Length: 380
Ligand code: GMT
Image (cartoon, rainbow, N blue to C red; front, side, top):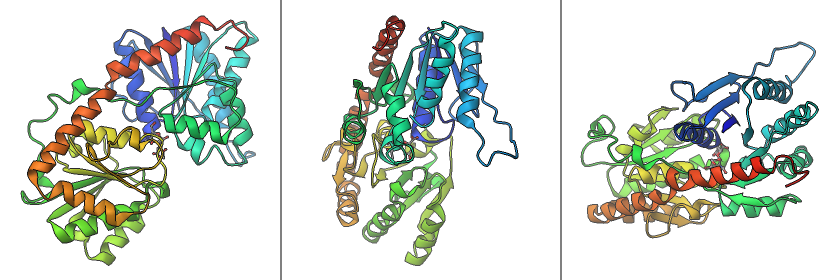
């Protein structure tokens, strides 16, 4: 099948999922066309099965805001016609589902029926999408998608609670590719980050408020009072500077390493002992799943879809949002004894394997087929 994928090309989870999905689809023989404003960060070499089409938004002084949706829907129309694309999969409702719907309508004028799958990722619903300024447009584009999927049962429920949804929502969880990890690294180069006797705690995110970055620092601060440890902070975002200051204030700056954005997540997770994700809201927590497949247990909040990924007492521990004292205690519970740590590591990887791409890809292929076969129906 020829599939166009629209996503954010950045380090955020939705872009990562869309990119990895596209690569997996191409490996299965589909022809995949990414349509976005920059080549997605996780997308490596392009080939005859993976194409990238850049959306250009020319600056025009009259516009205070450049019309990206307009440029995207025009680019979609052109790409779909030029390459004979059969199906459109948009990741993140805003503004991709809206632009996709406009492209669909323009193509219909030319008797081209292109089914659209919309995948909801989280903040497009729980933070941005529910804002009254966007809500009518988001509701409209969800209800006018041919198939809607959400990355967790929790996100599905939140979508139904917040919006007036008249469509079925299929839950298709995020995934990892376990074959990539079985032989990943023989030497993690742990010594570059910490002394042998120190434990390594890692946090990876886009450093937005919703990630509760100060909680990560406070949890680490409590842990390092009890056992020798380093904290590795990966990512960039508005909360980073405050986090650096907080480390100074707490006198732990020499134990915290801020790495910025990285394309070497697996290498970093390879030398990590524990992953911390205390988010205020999290539809799934792909970062936690990526940690788990790299044998890293997770200390997290119990927000949103995290409990669908991190199993309490098995792959790590869950606590109420903001309960840093309990999160620190649980972290110490895991880290203080190497036998306990080893058990949690084994459980983490075993549990993550349930989200292997081989299990999840057929779910997407099934909804693609359903959408494609009913493309002439008025409303599926
Ligand atoms: O976590 C973010 O802020 C980025 C955001 C995105 O849309 O890229 O991530 C969301 O989608 C990911 C992939 O489906 C999920 O794993 C994250 O949990 C979700 N983030 C939130 O719900 C806050």
